[in-house]
Image (cartoon, rainbow, N blue to C red; front, side, top):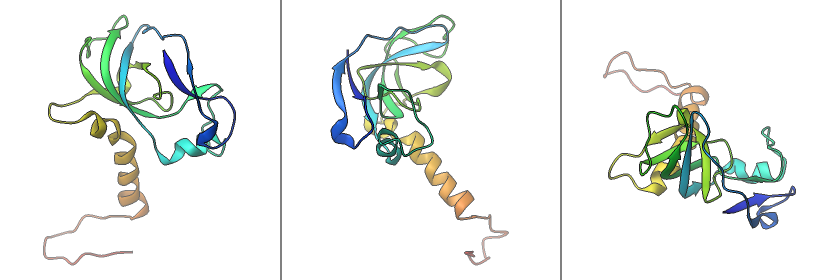
Length: 150
């Protein structure tokens, strides 16, 4: 199985594609064939060792993914082979197959593309944090109240 790996700190040019062993779904895990691995702002920081999360090398980048369930481990009840799924796995999606805990995956609704499904988790969380926490958004008391900005 092919994987995009960070084997040394540096810019994207230091990433390499290599063959690695195929993972196997264990208890509570799902094996997903990756269709889309979403890259985010922090991926470049992670490969340069400039981010708080520092996975041991070699590692694959990409925290988000979408794909199709290949196999399920013991005890997995929400998914079956052939299901379209997306999820946030912190890192490791830039490979052909990923094993993920069942709890980090979601079904992809009909009509939603793999590309959109793969990039929703981080974008949603970042947007929510920006609006609620940084922007200090507060609800209006009534619809005639003017918008206030701090």
